[in-house]
Image 1 (tube, helix red, strand yellow):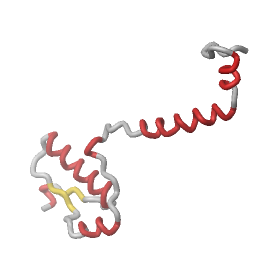
Image 2 (image 1 turned 90 degrees about the horizontal axis):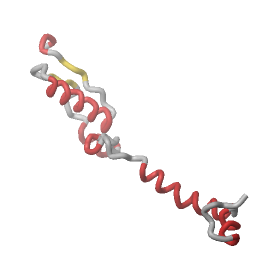
Image 3 (image 1 turned 120 degrees about the vertical axis):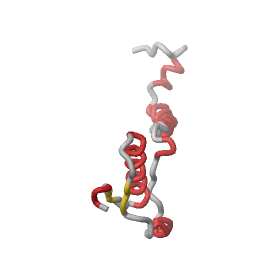
Image 4 (image 1 turned 90 degrees about the vertical axis):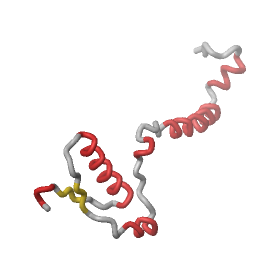
Amino acid sequence: MKCSSCPNSEWEALCRSPIVFLLVLVCIAPLRAARADTGEAAWLRYARLQPSIAAQYKSLPKEVLVLGDSPVLISAQNELIRGVDGMLREKLRVVHRRDI
């Protein structure tokens, strides 16, 4: 079978070579990995902190109290909980006004 993208028979032999296939695969694989992070999370990516750094935050409160119920406040509460969980692996407890 003739390769439609090869200009002559020498190129066609290269197209069928396992070495060329592996070389192309090695060159393309890093591009695929580099593309895996879409940046969709942007600055909201909460990577886990190193234990020595996370230890500095052990004294943070373990509860969250939001004085209001607007969508913006609820969203901020959820982001704070998600961020602390992602970076410190600590589950913050939500406290409601009726609980205090």
